[in-house]
Length: 263
Image (cartoon, rainbow, N blue to C red; front, top):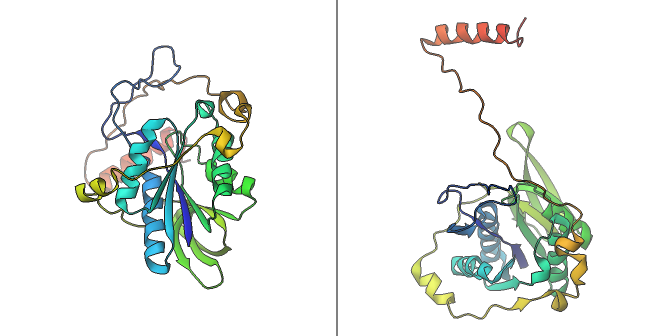
């Protein structure tokens, strides 16, 4: 099975104190530590495990600046077979639809049975996977936390739905799946793996290589434009209830009555 996994280089929230610029135009990016998007890392691990079971290859692709090469190489060191960089100044400022258009063009240039994305990236919109599937006219499922390969190009998939319940479906390939965290345990990337892929050539494709008109993507082509970043004002602190279980329960009931939650 030929699998393409879309990955993104994002600020590492565990290593950075994220601050917003005074003018609200962006976050402060100077001296930030970057890593691969958490959801994407689970998607790569799942792709590797599928190929280990049924054969094929895993390609990781990333849109961004040349700096995106570091996360592509990291995922190759993890076990992906190939890397692909989608880099062009024309891509800067793309909205979700533009990102999906770039990825769709890259998918069409290859021969893939399955495309995996993380359930969401650092902006939290969770929209690229669905848009990508729509542009390709492929079946799509989101929040996938189980994948089993069956005969005849069919996948049995599990989805996390409301209330912690599990929904099981069958979906035909080629398809696009957005992967939820917890589907697996991503493997540790060691120095040996990093050294092994350090000199591997990673192809880079531009807008022209993908057959994309510069005005169709990037800021010019964006239908959604971000107008402001801001930190919400801090609210009042939480009230901590003290006492025995019965005392805490009684206090909670009184508070709910006082706030109109109970009558």
